[in-house]
Image 1: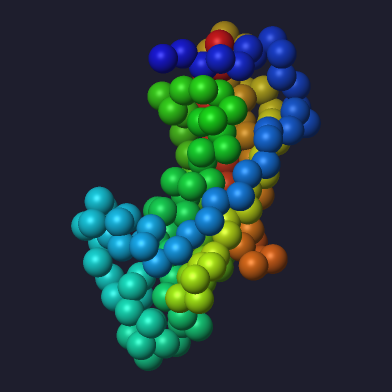
Image 2: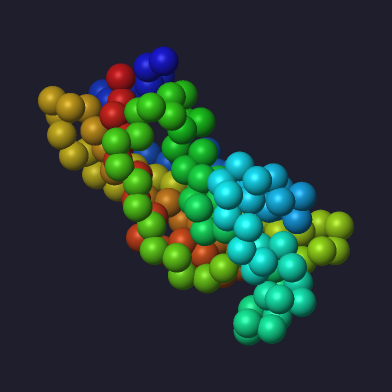
Length: 144
């Protein structure tokens, strides 16, 4: 698969389509099974509160994976991601209320990095419940 977005067609400031990703407890259990991360802060409300959290929280890597989907969906090829890094700033709290949480992601091309390699850096804004949950969320992607 190759990136479907052309390097020639993007400039710094190009906005990616924003997305919202719902998160419920069932998604956290499935992710725990896939990742092997069964830390009880991700599924046990009582335990999460005992260690000072407001409720069960989403896995950090789950949150990162959901956020980068804005870039991979835009580009059309997950293999086009060259580098991806974030700082975890706040947890995504996932209440057991039938609704759960929502991860809101927007992004824009910050800079063209390398004309020969056709790489750009996309900066993501990632929020949940009105608070930034990932800081310094930067994705380097190779375009067509």
